[in-house]
Image 1 (cartoon, rainbow, N blue to C red):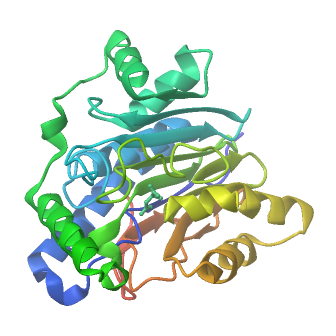
Image 2 (image 1 turned 180 degrees about the vertical axis):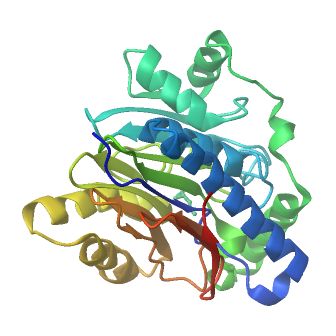
Length: 319
Ligand code: ASP
């Protein structure tokens, strides 16, 4: 069977105000989005699986300092990194995840290993690190993930907490995440998400990203979604699963279902939120309710688009 293929990614809805970075930095972040999409698209174009495409796309963003996942991840209140990731296979609803991992260079690959090589869905902390190490995955010192931007964001948030001005903190100071969803030529959908969580988060805090049905969900014939925003509310509203449920039980389109979550349910909690999503026909959608969201897609027409704020950059057809 050879059907339509498509991929959609996000690099988090914690985007900086446009004036706070140089044009060169914005261009570089868009370039990293394009590299992520290209990595996933190549897999799909060669007839490969949605899971492989999602993993490849997420790994590129985990390795980029522009996004809050892997290298460049957020720091917790004790100034170190605890990383969460999950991946889901829409073909059979199998899933794998790691949370509070400290030494796994690419947590999305560890999540996939949990799915395929363990009897669990979710492995935590030291056990996740030890499992990844036994699987022969690349391991790093926790300090590998640290960048000056995250050190500054942590200092700023601590200062705000002391002064009682936390509510005025920008989305970018607080959080971010990366995620990818894909449809392969065989009709399989997959979703993956990876994050450093919130800057200044309590040690041991786990967000929605490694929770299947909250930050990540995929089901063949329906949709694949990956979320970004304050995870506590995604968990409380089973956000990613709710999008699929709206489509399955209420006959919503992908657009109606994702909009309901972003502009009603999650906005109703007063939080910034966004999704990368794709349906079974390859239609992609990446709505957000913040001033920007790193995002991009290559739809069934084979054309690539990347964006950080409202303006979309159409990069033309893929070779
Ligand atoms: N969802 C992530 C978390 O709560 C953060 C984000 O997407 O910005 O850990």
